[in-house]
Length: 587
Image (cartoon, rainbow, N blue to C red; front, top):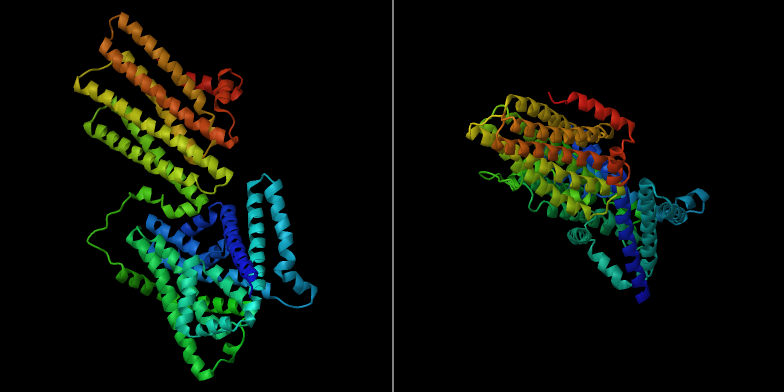
């Protein structure tokens, strides 16, 4: 074997691994987080969990990715450990699909239809279609499909290149002697585990083994223990993801290891004991890609069928391995556990998690401002302290969510997800400022209570009307944000302009009362602070609504949109403005 054959083998391996990575990335982006959300919700029964884990893994082509995602679900409290076990079992079955696809490279025959099944026949066509989608289509889904097709073509090209490069090894005695060592079950098991742990993909390591089969030097007695070891080696990814997680999440990663260890021990013990009695003759035959795919599938299906009834036992074993201490201190509150760093590898799903957390932040900001408005009519110290707690929690939301979104923005995102992240980063700042204004309003109420001050009867009526307008604009903005309601978003700006006019009119009326001696300068300062905070709350609500409209319109200029409305060129705006003006007319 020459140096050029070695370079070809290394290059083929590089193409193979990159193609598998590109295809997995494309499949993940095309799913848009839907597969992860299905995993999150549909785990009500063991059988359903196994089938779901198998289906999702077959689609995203990685049991490691599925298992890491499940560890993240358990860590976030989204999924129970008992549910996770069933999905992990299914993931091991689903990963065998890849080996069957790769086995097509070993198809032989002169028939036209058999030739069509060979990847070397259809991969170039898929590559051409994929490249056309990537270069000439602006549609995000088509580009993802293009990535999948090109990834598959690169994967199969790498497989063929590796197979061609290792063929000369059949004539190298040293190579045959090394492989003979692995016919020892323990050494073969160790070799498969180490190889898979290094590249962190059982599908890839099985593909490499299938490529080596073309030498004819790998017999089934060598291949079988290596395949068993590959199933154990793939657990390293989940074990690494469990570091620093909650105890239940670590238990989920340990279950993955125990499932493969126990399954391997049972399978190999049963197989080799049976071999003593029956003496399987196929073990001495040269292994082929289809045979390796078959062994891979049989092992994982049999292991799942045998261990599924004992899933509770696996759960108990995980609890015995990682015991409960006197107490477990969670690093994050329940809401923030949704922002698990494991989800960053699945950006589409991570974006959905961020939206869920941001929705809770929006609701909390709304509760804070409404409670603050109520305090102007009926002050209680408990309410004041509650607003302060809410504001502190909203600040934490902004810190946690903002940091997570910045990390997420550096990942490989679709255009839609990128726009969503920009929108969330913009809006959480507005929600945080709304909670700040809630503090300002509640402090004004506290000052009036402490100094036993009251507004005039006319001022009280006006403040009530103004507060109701603020209540409605905040509730509308939060509703718009949570439900992504663009129709409702167009109602915010007309109400914001009414709020601006209310602010001007109230200050004008206060000056009149001040001249007539019906109000004091000190009360005027408090009134001015209140109306200014009201107006700024409305401004932030306007920012949120306009930002969502902007995102849906693929980023047109915000100022241009507002200028158009201010000029009165929008009929809906004028109609709603007049309606709100009549509704919130000062007495």
